[in-house]
Length: 491
Image 1: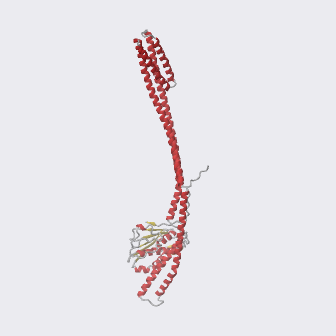
Image 2 (image 1 turned 90 degrees about the vertical axis):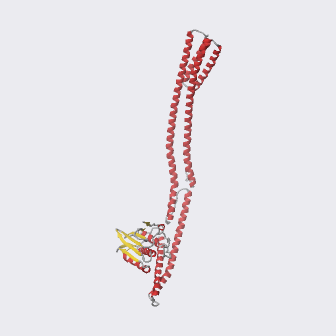
Image 3 (image 1 turned 45 degrees about the vertical axis):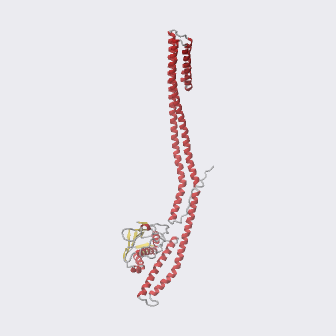
């Protein structure tokens, strides 16, 4: 009959526990039987040795009494002493029979000799008249002496038999100990093997489930979830696979929504910006200073709204893996200058000071994505800096690496927000003076695009009072597909 995999986790657990219980039961029953045998044997040896010693002492006592009664009868010729002799002789015979029943081998033969001598003594006592010659008395004394010698021999032979039984008992105990030792030596590996197999059968699908949950939690939704093991865990894996597909569908729906809304917003925004530029150029007449200030505010907010829409489009396209890098060779300084020019009006309005130190570096990277990276970091620094603050920007090379630092004098990033600040749509707590939050896309786009270039983003402490972001990336990158679920590194 072929073994089949248990259909449920409970069945597998029951099988494993049953196997371990069976092994333990076999060991316990075997040990109990052996201990019972040893105990019975030891008790029997003790009882036999005690009985043999007691009966031997009784033989000595009864022989002494029998001899004393015989001598008194020979001297006093009292019939009552003869009756006493018969009773004592009967007791001696009973004691001898008990020893005979317990004895074996040589001891039994000696007891038979003792019975013969006892009968000889009885015959002499009954047939010899009292007051006989000294020769008869001497012969009776020799018979009693010989009877004592035989009793000594019986006691010695009984002791020898007990010693032999004790040796047998020791051998039995040694065999039982060895048997239990080897049984334990075999049982322990079997139990360890059973535990290992049970852990392997259950542990592997549990690790698969743990890895699947971790992937879902980190947004890695493109890896199919497959769990092999008991049917209960396979069903759980199927539920996780369904959840993965559902989350993927929701992510695709969200990205489609972002793309559609972003495209729908771009058309009226383009019209607003075009109208604003026409008014600024005096197409409908010259504007006074107040009107120009209002139009500048409109143009500034139009540019900010355009940047948000571009972030949404870039994030949506990157999440659907529809785009990759388009490396080209360009200089970093002109790109930084263009980025700062787009923030010029806001910088002037905030009366901010620019502390910019950028090496004249030539890069091979995706220029459009590098611009979005810098625009988002600069926009974030400008938004969270107080009036009269300073925007710090550094760019230098270290071997084949490019290091870019962007920092401000704002409140910084709270410790509790650092794990989520690079997560899409996470806006954190609004800083003082910031009435409207952003989309929560900017730093997520920064992380995605920096990682696509093979770099990292760090949050650095101690060099500037506000938020300080540091980018490390190679100066020359190759086109590579975007990666999902990357994490930022906080220093």
